Image 1: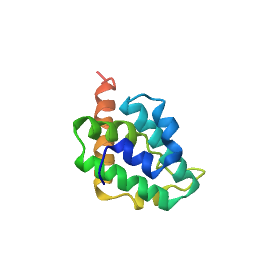
Image 2: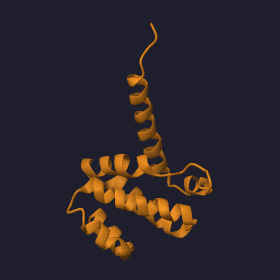
Image 3: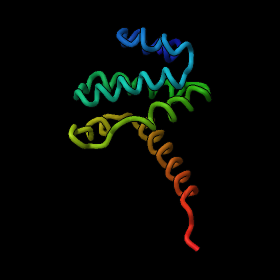
Image 4: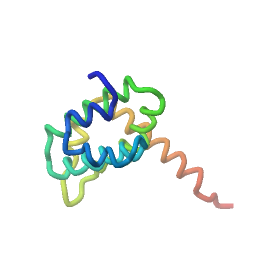
Length: 123
């Protein structure tokens, strides 16, 4: 995959072009557009599209600069809805590439540490 993440997303999913363009280069907001798209595909059960999204995100997680890697952790992985509820989503975890899975686990661990620091201690 060559080019920038956003160019790659736009080429793979032309329906996202207008929504991505409205955020005027604000990477985290653009990443949220992609995350919302992935979550919608997970809810629809569209394994092929989710796998393609994961492939793109995994590539840039491994090869992106610091800002891009941060955006993938904070604005994509942190906001994926993988919990089963009315819709079964476990399959989306099962098809996630190892690199993304490690990134997901890492950001969730960071959030857990932060929450534990914010909890008042009993005296």
